[in-house]
Length: 223
Image (tube, rainbow, N blue to C red):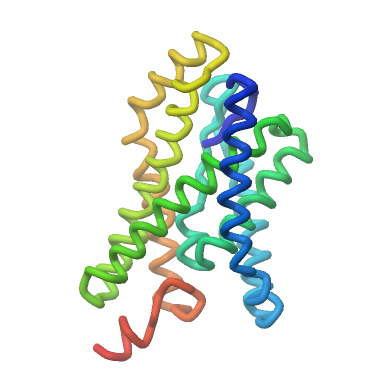
C-alpha cells in the first residue's frame, strides 16, 4: 500500500521524508554496492528483483483517491538481499512511480517510509529473533520469517500509514477512510505472507545460497 495523493499536512510530509532519508542513509552507510560490484550474479538477481517488484506494483487497487493497495515484497527483498540492498531497491521503485506520474513527488519520502523503512525494520527484527533464539530448523526459518515475518511487515506498513493520517491528515474525510481501512488490515496481511512464503520456499529448495539471511550450512548441512 502507498499514498497516491498528498492528504497529509506539509510539515508531516517534510518530517516523514527526513526520517526516511536519515534511515536510508544509515542503511547506505554500510556500502551495500560493494557486494554488487564484487558479484555479477548478485547484480543480475538484484536488478531483476527490482524490476519485478516495480512491475508487480502496477497491479494495484485504488481503494480511495489518495490510497492504493498493492503487494510490497519488502519482506522478501530483505530476506533475499538484506535490508540495505532492499531499501535501495524500494527507493528506485518509488522513484520510478514518481517519474511515471503514478505518485506525486511530495509523497516520495512518505511512501519510502511506509513501503520500505517500516516493514524492513520489522522484518529485520523478526529475522534477528529467529537467528538468535529459535532452533536451527529450516521450517522454523521459513514459517516464522517467510510467512509470519511478511505478515507483520505488511501490518507495520499499514499501521504506519494510518498513524501518519492520525498525526496530520489535511482532510477529515480522508482520516475517517484511514480509520476504516485499519479494520481491514488483518485481511490484507495473508496475501503478502502467502506470496512471500511461497517464493521463499522455492528459493530455499532450489537456490538457498541466493537468500542472504539464510545460512544453508547451519540450517541444512549440519542436520
